[in-house]
Image (cartoon, rainbow, N blue to C red; front, side, top):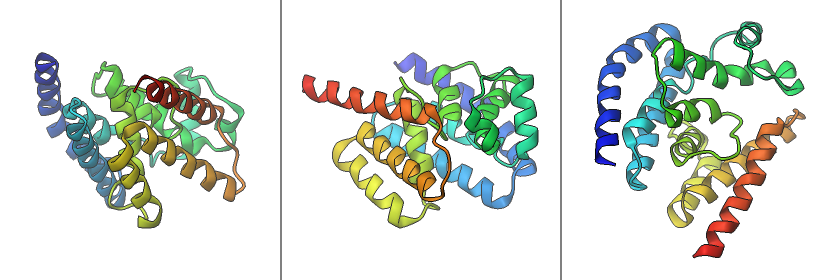
Length: 208
């Protein structure tokens, strides 16, 4: 574990001075502030859970790197990179920013780590079998200080009282409700992720 932390620390130390100036040129000031918030919160959550906080921080730094790419371009890039697309992706191509963000992390910054890439890829839709680091980034995105207190505060409390998985489940539930209230389409990945997480929590409870 210590050796892995050492590698992750070295990777963060090498890439952060490159990523920060690039982000400042690539995204708006408001988006940059959100990204930094998510990165810091992900680091804090990971530390609390005794996870690799260097990975969590780095994943947080790149999670919204493609957020401000226009929808048509996101769709074009996704097709070019042969990303598997659902009909919901065609209806709401802005959700592809997470998967294109993973491409940026791989191609521009040469990141290969599955946890770091998972945090970037899954922070919008989630997916089954998320790693703890991936879930930490998802949770940080839902609860960073810039989020509305009414929605974020209960999730933070669940994390404090019940742990990571129940908090992530609540964050997914909130996101689903928001999409439904707006009359949007639910992505099958999110439904599958939610079902997996419910089963995962039940299995963990049965072992306790």
